Length: 402
Image 1 (cartoon, rainbow, N blue to C red):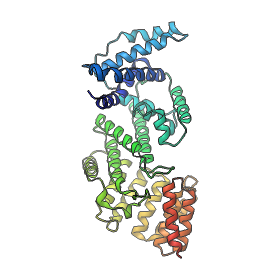
Image 2: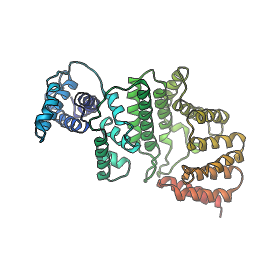
Image 3: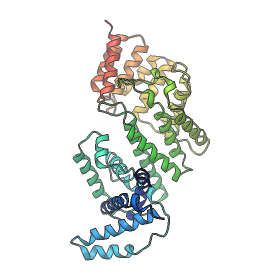
Image 4: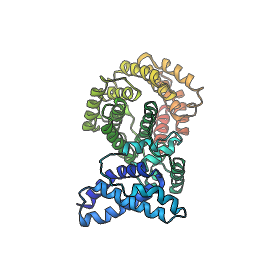
């Protein structure tokens, strides 16, 4: 087996092995250290000696031995050996996959969203601390501290069993974390690049895998469809010089047709089943934009109706802001501006650059280029992403005239 195939196999098995150890021993941090050592052994030995017949069992066995070695070197040797010893000799006889339980553990309610994201990417996505730190543009030491604190917070929690209501609530947290990871990858909130493809790709991989584990969950399928339909636009979202290209100005022939087809097929199979949830509705909105031959031919009344439904299902100011755009396209820019003015008093959104960018867009449509230019400059001043700031400044300059 080539090093590359070994690497892919280990990446696939890593969360399963970590899940198995956490289920059996219940110590996330020490289990993770043991798994990392087992993965290192496999990466060294398998390309030479070949992959064992049961690679997951091999990794679990080696990691368990490493864990026991770690425990035996600690001061509380006797107490910890007693706790670990019964499980040490228990053979890994089943093919149980604890990966999903591991994701649920990483999204424990005691953790903040940033900690959930970091821990999920580390434990389930297999990203190194340095990779996660680079993706979120923070020093590696800062990310290491965040992950360490997260591990301490859930130390000894274990998988346990969740009541159906708690399981549903935790799944919502899992989907939210995956969506946040994807969103950060699709449009970097700061930095010099428009996107972070590695991050959005990892979110799609994890959601695809979760969808395979929960094939009947329509919201998981809805989230995967949303990611696929959105990420399909990525090839057209940047100009050759790295500048941001908004949706209305994108060359639609550059969209990833295979990804669009997969997303549309998934959505068409999901919508007729079960209750409609927020991710399915957002995927439906993405589908309407995707199916329009041109930006001018977008079915805005349908987009507005879907935002009405989304606002009912999951009200939040960003949804209302997006609805204001659709409202302006259907009923005229002043209708949208009235909504934006009301949102300007919402402390969650009043300082966000998108509020001022939407106001600028609607003012431009209303035939007031001077006010639109001022609003674009205000949006640019608040934007953290360099490409977004440049794009908004360019818009402001064009409307300001000579």
